Length: 112
Image (cartoon, rainbow, N blue to C red; front, side):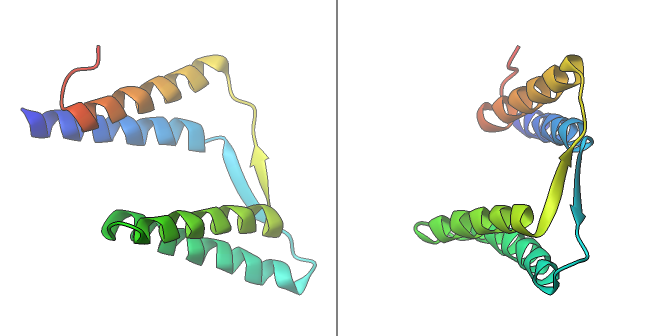
């Protein structure tokens, strides 16, 4: 039964991320040459940071968070983040889904 709660929680988390991520677009500019390099750096550092956070232990996770932070900064330096308007209902559903999914994944109990 615990595995079922974990899988349901993971599904709710992914559903919430989908609802929020549906209205966020990242675009790059074509003018300066360094923006293409910064866009590549952002993708690479985000991927490396996530792998470090998930698979490494102890202080190495701190380096993973630093890599993720660097990747986020590079996204805003190299490109534009376009946030499309979202309804309050969709925002509520996304956060409720992520919150309930996280609770189900960590406690393996029904959060309601």
